[in-house]
Length: 395
Image (cartoon, rainbow, N blue to C red; front, side, top):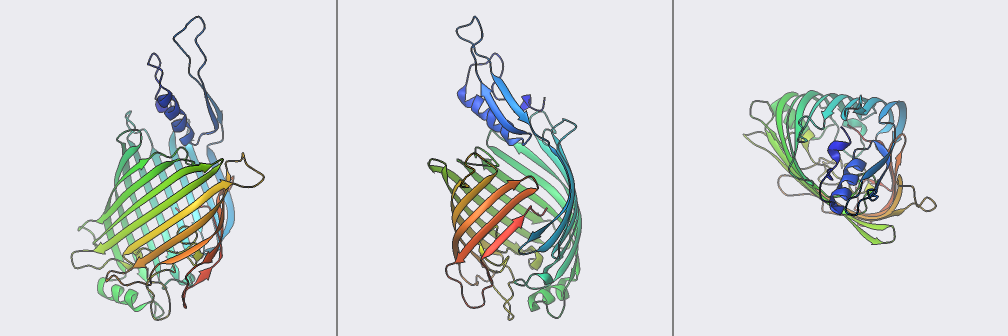
């Protein structure tokens, strides 16, 4: 049932090359198989009928991991997780995660039913306990936060490529600032207290025509998302962001990737945007070559404050890693990055640009990213980090 519900070519229907292609893509996107092939042999004794044979090679969909890693921005990370993307063969996803580092400590439980209804409406639940210690980041203003929360979310497919999602999340956050914290942070806690709760509604839309999630070579991604803290909580703010990503084959196995991101946030009802909800840029996931979160407005000590507006752009030429052409888990690229952060008044520190080489590896232990970047227009006071890497991802 889990596989057949992804099929777009039905028995007894008119043969459709597009539907068969889409069926293969949807099966590949499940992440349950290392290989998916489709064959259409003629039906014996018939001149106008074919069979559709879907041949799949299963791979383990469960993962139990206890280990450690190292991030150029977060230091030593101890992690443990138990996850199953095909729980008891039902296609449901269940995960329990533990991540610890000198900056982020996260305990999380997540459950998703991708076919909560037969029409493909998904439903998920998330619970988390998160601690952030920004005093360990050399480029960002120091503070500590402890958050406890949970929420429910739904996803509704509109067609083969479009889907909307919405949800509700409850969060309780306790803040700790010191005399070393930026004055803006100290003023916020003095005005609104060191403990805040919020009830945030989320709404988003996505259109995804990429041919693969692991190794995309063509297609586009549009993602629009919004978050609104409802007036029933202490916090009152809104955030909105938009992402556009495109993959286009160039020649042979070389692929051009373009990515653009815009974000805006603001408080309302006489409340400021909480500083821990600010946007940041800089690091391996945005503008490489600059320290994590270091781009944008800074305090008198040169520490980044984040901002209410974010602009990031990336251009990459992706190609197979030399010597392992047919290994779709390993890919190299030449990139050009740019990005800027502005505060509510519109002031900032301008755009920063960089270029360099990167390697992405979907290893058995989690995704690995390496980059060596050359900042192109750094200024005095910028915190540079030419070699960066990231192991796994933070929930």
